[in-house]
Length: 231
Image 1: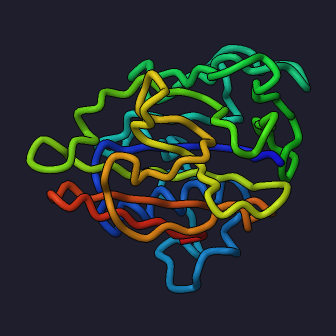
Image 2: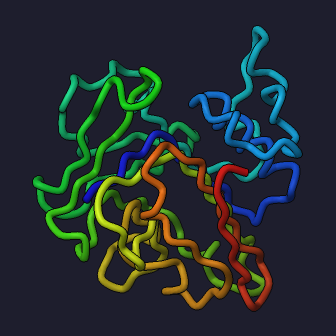
């Protein structure tokens, strides 16, 4: 069983409808998934303004962006890895320096593929066991995950696909799991409700073709969480 990750964007706020749709439009058009968007989506017919002109749209232009991992630019401006290379660090493009560092043994390293989907690159993560926490750990302050007045909420958008057996507890990320050093862990078997938030959770392991995953949690005391696919 494995997960293939193409791009991940995180905001330190529970996103408004238009912000969610803008990021979804950016990701869908970039990775060739625009036809999977609902016809009612703001960017079903055209990408967000800026993607097709001299100054392209960038996620860092979105207020609250503080994590951006992109398989098209694993090393944030430096040369791409060679095919099949182990990726110990996936460099953050948001400008915040929140690089995703591989967690666990070398056998669990993500590997780089230059032609993961539509001729575009990916990071392929394969655990030694489906019940094992593996993947990448991101050193984000826990402040934004403390539900209530101190929290701004959060939103996470990921382009990915899964390969292997259906697993009811599979997750693309976990938050605040007790035995890991940092709050965000990419491709974990523990759901976000490890910090007490409640909401809608979908089995991510049923999506075996490249898919756009969106999730958001508001800043209320209840910490209401939602996730959905393809806009």
